Length: 276
Image (tube, rainbow, N blue to C red):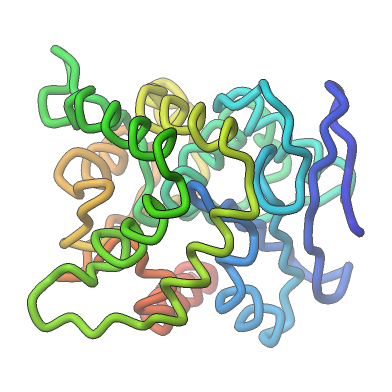
């Protein structure tokens, strides 16, 4: 199994496909999933001649189910461990949802001389939690309810989450894919409950404002207009304003899980941005 051991002894699983001499694209997955969530994008871009890499976040997928370190600083350091181990340079980093936060912190703190471009898809920055300074954010009660459901019956919670708001399957006229729902559930249940429980705080209460301000590489900020998990009004446009060199793309009516439900749209946007 391809993996790297971090400084604090955590084994991080990763996939590394394609020519070692090709430009690398590094994918950062969302909560509570794993690198498998990028299958469609990785197959597409390895077929185009790129080197594609994705890792399972600590406590997720095939990485160690440790009880601590489930915060953005550790997530970013773990990503850096994979990048340093593979000696990736001139890389394009792509983060979805929580992975967008991870990618932002990685680029800001570890990747300045290794990153060519950054892509944020349905990403959590700048800050999800509602505060006095962020009145459009989610109330803490909403996040506490996620924690309660996870702790009470994680398997049912994940099934309901994937069957409903994540992919927009709760919208009138939506055609749900049971295969997509069960694949989301499978990925979630591969990970550890403690990691996922603590991860809610990590993705919702981390303020990425200063990270975003410090990033100068070209960045694509891509979001669905009907995102029920990370509402677009309090995320993508605000991140785009904080970044030094950003391109904002909002696709009306598309859900949070657009990398799966609208993979063709996402792959086309990524291709155009990478080639620009």
